[in-house]
Length: 126
Image (cartoon, rainbow, N blue to C red; front, side):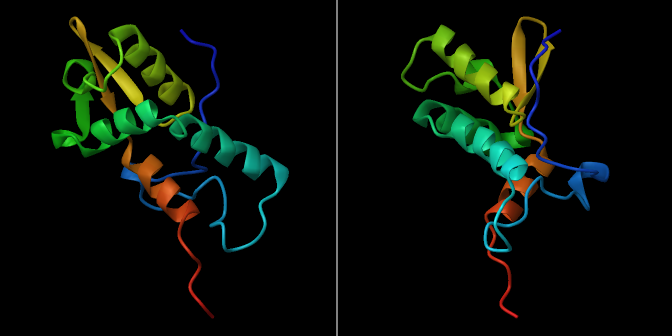
């Protein structure tokens, strides 16, 4: 089992991400404290590589909400490099995976997308 720390995007979350709170306030709500900034930076750093962003997008947009590595590995780099980038996305807490036979299936949890969306959403004008 890996000893890497997953990105804590969510505090207490309900079933299927309902009522989940993002790790950090929306950027327009107030200045982030140091811990919130560190958490958000890990997420953005993981998505800051074009290959990782393409892989994340391929998984997130795949039918059924999950994708076999065999279906998303055509991103212009070798298979070991794809595996490296998928590992980095998992370490950042952005993907989960499950081995089924010889293939690994990746999923972006709906709560992760919801938390990312809330972080980047502007607060309504008062």
